[in-house]
Amino acid sequence: MILIIDDEKNIRRTLTMVVEGEDFEVESAASGEEGLARLEESGADVVFLDVLLPGLSGLETLRRVKELDPQIEVVMISGHASLADAVEATRLGAFDFLEKPLDRERVLITLRNALSRRQLSARVQAASGGDDPFDMIGETPAMRSLRREIEKVAPSRGRVLITGESGTGKELVARAVHRLSPRARGPFIKVNCAAIPSDLIESELFGHERGSFSGAVGRKKGRFELADKGTLFLDEIADMSLSAQAKVLRALQTGEVYRVGSEQPLEVDVRVVAATNKDLPSEIKAGRFREDLYFRLNVVPLKTPPLRERAEDIAVLAESFIGHFCSENGMRRKGCSPEVHEALRRYAWPGNVRELKNICERLVIMGADPLTAADLPEEIVPRAALPGTPTGVAPGSVSLKDFKEIAEKGYIEATMRACAWNVTRAATQLGIERTNLHKKLKALGIERDEE
Ligand SMILES: Nc1ncnc2c1ncn2[C@@H]1O[C@H](COP(=O)(O)OP(=O)(O)OP(=O)(O)O)[C@@H](O)[C@H]1O
Ligand SMILES: [Mg+2]
Image (tube, rainbow, N blue to C red; front, side, top):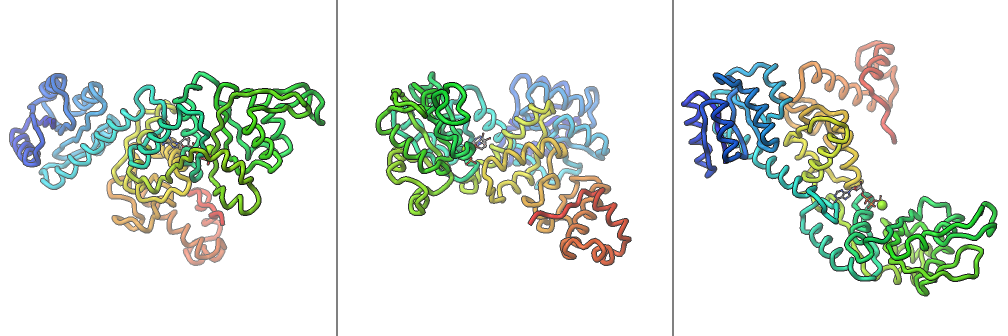
């Protein structure tokens, strides 16, 4: 339902007609008090709210609407919005501003954007709501079928080999397999085969007896033993040395392990889940991975899809990460303009979900509220490529002072690059003193790009 709160009868009538014409259900109220009473009764998806109201002011009404239900999107309407009001309304969580006289197209576009944001937050809430054994966000067909496969394989003892690009969520999959298995009460032990030096990996995996090699002080249990009755997650399996591979193979064949320096077999009940971002068949061809171990591990293959192949998940992931980092940093939930979502959707995400998560954390810490395209790093929004202004900053998103700074920074950066970072040459081209250019580089935080 769409609620219109305005004391002017004409505005109420026009808006009602426009919105009803699009088959939305509409109600209207002539004051903030009346509007709030309506909301308490029946809720709403989007509220159009006049800034200048008799009695309860527009801003105060906005504050109470958001208190009632933060997920209601509020579009402020004003005759002559003062900047201070606009800033305050944004701070209170208003979605957008419309100026009188109202333009039909603008109203409808704003309404659709507000509704799609509301649907998005509902999806985010559903996705992060409660005890989801997956902890995996994403509703694209690829993610749904991955979840179904996990559900199928988890209850068995079958070994699982997870492959996929870096940052696609292989570890999340491994944990989900464990959590949905009958071993869920047992331990989940992770071994990062790439992080452990090759001369230590065997003792790490199988344990050692006192004095079995120099540096082996005391007895130590290996990860296989620690994972008894649970799941052993062998991460980055392609990086394991060939001699460790041979021992892992033997352990998988016999269900027994030997501590380094011991002849005494130990029986272990372990389910192995392995993961890699490398292509194991080509590692086998190159002689770096044992084919027989590959067949042992690859009983049930699971593949995590790269983020660029499921672009529809990007917005939900981003909203959820932004919400997460805002609360982690004790901040009010930052808004996110449609242009930001559009830019995130278009980007190719070579680092996949991990890269998206990192960028969202940076946006929350460094970005404005609401976030705009100007907050996004250059690799996601090439400044020159955006329409609108010469710098690609969307109109209305920053102050003139900030715009000048952005433009200046972009131009100096481009000139520096064109001059191969030769300050003297760039200064001549820019028509300023060398020392002045040095100062500007520092003040604007311009640094030579890594090559
Ligand atoms: N579908 C998802 N929903 C929510 N968070 C996700 C999802 N996929 C990945 N992540 C998050 O992205 C980050 C990277 O995921 P993970 O460590 O599982 O990737 P990986 O495939 O193991 O990468 P690598 O090969 O580099 O080890 C983690 O912080 C994880 O929580
Ligand atoms: Mg990983």
